[in-house]
Image (cartoon, rainbow, N blue to C red; front, side, top):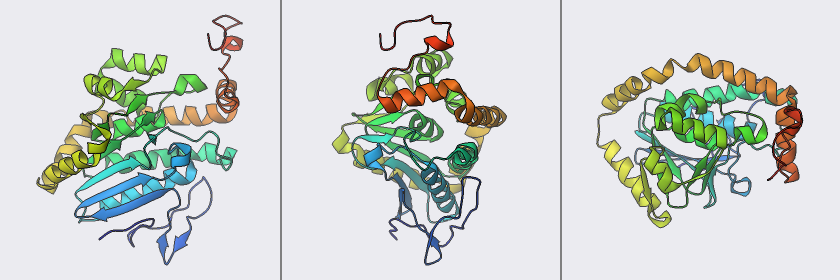
Length: 297
């Protein structure tokens, strides 16, 4: 079975604080921002906003959460692949230029983020991130939530939070130290540098790197190997592997509440986002009594 652009009948409609019901098509939820495909035991979920480097808005996060819930409920699905449309990016995090991102949506967005993260971590099936191009900010947080990552040689990884007056508290601060070690995680989080696919492989942020034109074949090989394993055995292994980091869930909740309040009211994210939109370096000196380097120096 192959399904494009809409989910099967298992998807239900959800109301949430970010506003409104999802649009429906023949009783099914119609996807605007993602593609959902199921074929031969594989569910592929694609963030379909290539013109925005697959940055997610409220609608995108809602649809991703629904798609992971559909894949979890589908007994025919044994492995899930998460990817981004086009060749330029896997995902670059939240779309700060989204004109539909109202204050009410900002306040409620962290509930949708939570639903999506739990959908990835609690689906009981291996999730593979298929990365090509930029995997930055919230996109890299999605990457570390996935069980496995296969990257094309064009992959670029990193976090952006402190660049825009925020921090990656949506499992980034919690999972990166467990993935790459605490010292390296602090470097990634504090300095917001970008790393090549080979550097990401060396630090343990991805599982394999191949030329971009071999990426689909490599992902297919990993999916085939997974589908040759016991579904129950894989489910038990995922539950057991998540047990340690599940203890950090309270930290994630508190962190996301802080991020939500900060993005609505905080002067530093307002400066960071304004500088991004104006395509200029942020001036953080005003928050350090005028101390620090000139912006962009």
